[in-house]
View 1 (cartoon, helix red, strand yellow):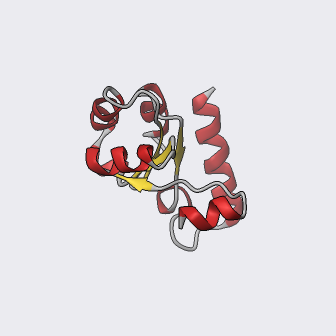
View 2 (spheres, helix red, strand yellow; view 1 turned 120 degrees about the vertical axis):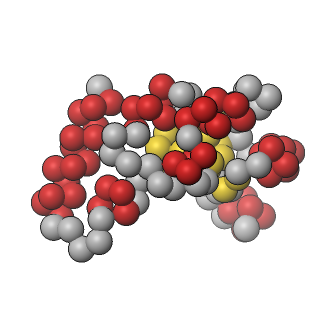
Length: 108
């Protein structure tokens, strides 16, 4: 997939979890990485994998709740992605927007 992204000048963020996967992605010149499932591993795991790979910028993705965003950012995540933990299943768009604004306000 990364060769296709490079051919079309698209951002490609590979998903990684293990040190082997992180090393492979970095050897392929990817420095922005999706740590997945970050929520199952915890912020301590994020800090642990950052130590040997300071050049990597990790986005915490997967099982991240609204209360976890600040915790992962403080642990060193370059960003956080939220899916079902933010939007639920079939939630009203107005409710989703209010929840997203609350998360953004907690970061400030």
